[in-house]
Image (cartoon, rainbow, N blue to C red; front, side, top):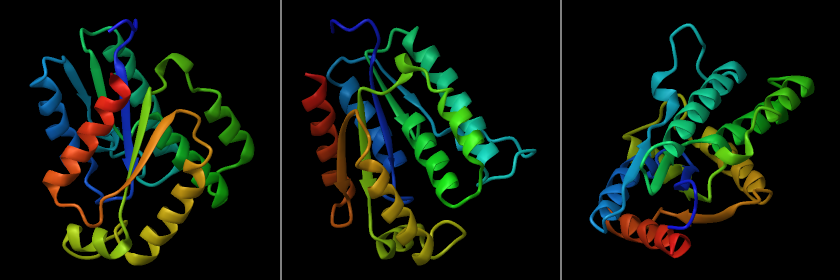
Length: 194
């Protein structure tokens, strides 16, 4: 590849749309084609207990952890970096918190100023499902996986998605089995990579 940094693909979208499961499989598919692939896990998995989940501060913490992971990846030998809920995802949540009046405009603007251009993804892939599918995949309703939350999330996400300025793809996975989803995402990554 002629780029000085690895090709970076960020995944986001509806909870239970298949992001995390597919990232691991697609990484292995790319490795079988001799690409050196690094996967950055969702930073929410390592959120300290001192920071309340679902808050503006939690989103900011995850944003900085993700930036650190991407910076590490840029200096690695990776050809491709697959990012599970990265910087665009934290941008969406910041925007969502502002829209819901869960943060002040000046806090949001200060947060927006922390985005480093060289850490932006080359491709953004959004995976979306309807609420009923998310609930079924989750095995029942929960705090974030319930009909009302997913409906609002999807509406907000689609509105936000329109303004993303990177190469992007939105893939509805409602009717896809895991094999179809993996193949579709793999082909999308290759399309932009080659």
